[in-house]
Structure formats: structure tokens, C-alpha cells
Image 1 (cartoon, rainbow, N blue to C red):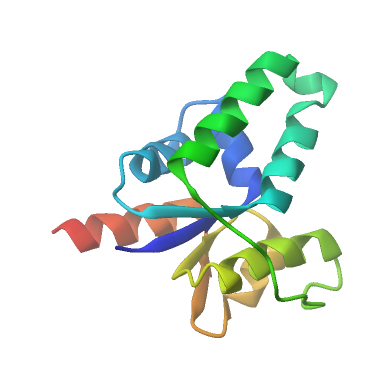
Image 2 (image 1 turned 180 degrees about the horizontal axis):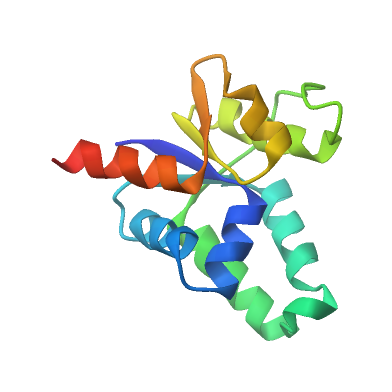
Amino acid sequence: MLRVVLDTNVLVSAIISNGKPKDLLRKGISKEFTIVTSELILRELGTVLRRPKFKADEDEIHRIILALIQAAEVVELVLKLNLVEADPKDNMVVETAYDGRVDFIVSGDSHLLALKSFREIKIVGVKQMLTCLEEKTT
């Protein structure tokens, strides 16, 4: 089964609106692939969801993160990278992917997408990942 890290921007999009990111998250929750995450990504997700524009209360944020912990494999980070100099916070996504031995990182972040890959890990957008999953089932 494919192992995939969903970047925080993909998770937020999936949580706040309908569309391809939500479709992808649902596929992960229904075990069409394994969602791999880390405490750092979960912490960043909580921080982002606390921004006033998202109007999420603490109970809602707690439920979202708990549901994600239950649906995903949470890996401990060992590797420390300085790969994404333009936005150092993006390094945690690649570190999670490497330590979680994933096949794909799914992101909408231009810094990560510009890398295209890291070692054997492909870095793709949501639409590309959905296409890949469709091809695997046909």
C-alpha cells in the first residue's frame, strides 16, 4: 500500500472545504493509502486552524487532530534537513516523509513542489496524487 505525507496546506484545504483535497483525505481515511504524519505536522495543523479566519474552536481542533492521529501513522522524526532554504518550516514535511518511508509527499506548496522529489520520494500536487491512486485501482 502506498504511504503518503499530506502537507499541512492539503490537510487544511481538506478540512475547510469540499473538493479534491477532501477527496484525497477521505481516500486515506478509508485506507486506500496510508497517511503518514508527525507530531510537528499535527502541531502546525493546530496552529494554522487557530488562525481567526478559520473560526475553529479548541474542541473542534482537538477532534480534528485526534481523528487524524487515529487515521494516520504518526512517525517520530530523526532526520534533520536544511533542504528548503526559502521556507525552513517545509523541511519537517520532507523529514516526516523520509523517516516514515513514504512514496509520496502531497503538497500545494511551491517550494516543495519545485523539488519534484527527494531521494525516492515523489513530491506531487493533490490532482496528481488522485490520478496516481486511480491508476493503481484500475
